Image (cartoon, rainbow over all chains, first blue to last red; front, side, top):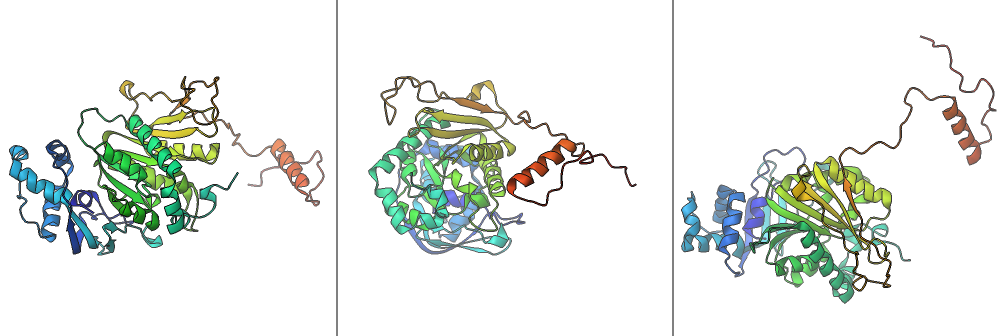
Amino acid sequence: MRLITHNMLSCNIKGVTNGYPLGIEASRLETKESELNPEFLRKIFPKLEWKALRDAAHSLGLNDLPEHVEPSMLEDADFLKNFHHALLEVHLEEGALICPETGRRFPVTKGVPNMLLNEDEV
Amino acid sequence: MSLRPERQAPPEFFYNETEARKYTTSSRIIDIQAKLTERALELLALPDDGVPRLLLDLGCGSGLSGETLSEHGHQWIGLDISQSMLDIALEREAEGDLLLSDIGQGLGLRPGTMDGAISISAVQWLCNADKSCNHPRTRLKQFFGSLYKCLARGARAVLQIYPENAPQLEMISAAALRCGFSGGLVVDYPHSTRAKKYFLCLMCGPPSTSTSLPKAKGLDRGSESEGSSDPDEEAGTVDILERKRPSKKQKDKKGKGRSWVLKKKEQRRHRGYTNVPQDTKYTGRKRKSQF
């Protein structure tokens, strides 16, 4: 699972109001290279929660995302490279996602988070 | 005709390791899924600017549909309930991110994030009540409600389904409309039993002139249709579904009159009850109110 997906995921348990963003516990990461597409990055940027992305990147050990992003930075090749790497190239293979409100753990195996809810959580 | 998969077992059990592998290695199925995904992408009507979009693949299974999405250059997030199917998707190195989840529980995605959603041959599974806690209508509501929320403004959802019968199709469509979607059903090759395909095309927000439903296939493409080449194939049908449909039943809610009582008694006699009283002039007569 890449950080682009993590940025969109929210805890779906019934009654939870503050289920975003999910905390990350990473036991194993993998980096898979992919083609950088600046247009895509510029298009997706407004949809992202930057702070959540930055915090998630931190928990995976990636510290080169700036705190604030000016629109001009989206033209800067270096920034785009780091952005692309954090968003699309780092894969969480083993670990867990944690709901910030209830602490419920969603285990991640082989890169696939198990988001199935129990009967009492729906 | 063999039993529908939806009638045999819940999807996470039907698509076990063996079935999942059988499904994914069948060249016929691969071909069909690819075609359906291409058609769904066509119906999704994404802007033709070459910019990749972030799409949802609901019921992505072993990634057959996702492969087509990747070929078009899009980023996608796939959801499926069967671990075995997802394992095969991983084996085939699906490029999208995969989530093991039950779409009937809701999608769990932030509002307004997705540029579009497709689903190939999956949503009809929601109509089964596989567990005693499952109620199909509630699950459909959770699904469509959360889908509506997570789509960006102006985004579409194209769901290819295999409804078992007309009431099931109606149940699915009605649930979608109740959650705020507008749109309708596109039926490709409506006159061929084998080739007939239902696409539920949903748009966020009220209908406008720019969001008219696309034309269905099966017009004069006699050579392209699967099965027998029928020279009489007519245009596909496109039904626009509106939120307010005229109610077909105009029930007389002012109490149940004599005719209703007589009908009910006749029904019981027909079913074999012998203790049904005779019909007399007193049957179903209006009684003096006691209060």
